[in-house]
Image (cartoon, rainbow, N blue to C red; front, side, top):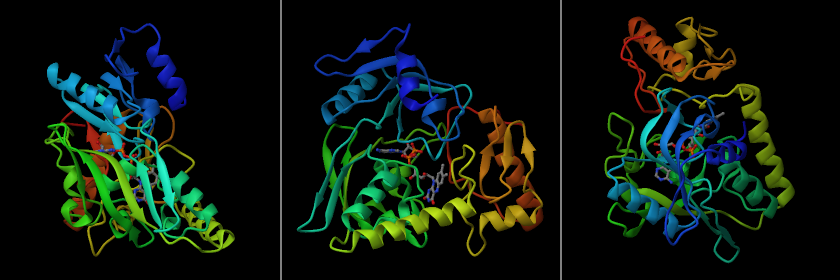
Length: 325
Ligand SMILES: Cc1cc2nc3c(=O)[nH]c(=O)nc-3n(C[C@H](O)[C@H](O)[C@H](O)COP(=O)(O)OP(=O)(O)OC[C@H]3O[C@@H](n4cnc5c(N)ncnc54)[C@H](O)[C@@H]3O)c2cc1C
């Protein structure tokens, strides 16, 4: 089911709550599997996808008034949602859309819900350099800013000028990369508790990137295509996944450690260590979130036994998972 079909389906036969003064609707027990790139996971107790800042604020106010924990969902491309779902209110940023390319300054200002690959293609078509490397990262702007998404020796922190963030008290703050404490695939926006919810929820609403306009569009499109082609030939884009499951424990690559542990192709239920790239777990069809979770634990155990290295998941796990597999 596509995310659009899932949104329609979630609206049927359900007790909807309309937030006054907005076009915002809260849906109960909304399935999240179509909203994650793994295509697994249970339902959000409540789900909302605001279209502007006022509706986002109203959603947060509703959660506060009703004592609901809040979870932010971008494109769900770095998430493993439990089969038991997520308690509280899931706020999806997918409809927060806006973009402005300023040819005078080379600044690209975009809302949190814009798609990174779409921006990479659009910038390339205009002859703007800077986003070619990101074309294979299927997330949103907000997710990329939070995760410090990166590839091919570039990352979001290198090009971010500022991020607009909605604070828990409703204030909007503009933060610079140094204030976001960036390092390899992390930022200070990732302070999650054990249930995977941000403790002091700060929501990225918009970001400004410095790009370089004025290049030959054909050349930038060709470079972007080359990056995409490289990804397609080295990573398994043909099955649902979350990209790299583990952070690279420098100086090793997680994929190499997993491969050397003989785990390529290892499968639990519908979840398999990809043959093409051992740091990917793919959903071969019908996987449960718990299959993926147990495979993560198995890989960690095997790599720990063999290399005495603790692999740290890059994927964010949301909701409850069973302690033993
Ligand atoms: C095939 C594939 C390839 C991938 N390749 C790469 C790669 O090369 N490099 C890389 O870095 N990643 C890669 N990823 C992982 C993923 O795409 C990135 O981590 C991406 O930045 C996540 O963005 P998202 O919008 O999907 O965030 P989500 O997965 O929805 O969320 C990730 C985290 O960010 C939080 N979050 C999301 N949006 C906001 C917001 N607006 N405000 C506050 N918190 C927010 C969520 O609560 C969650 O904690 C890949 C994934 C796939 C499926």
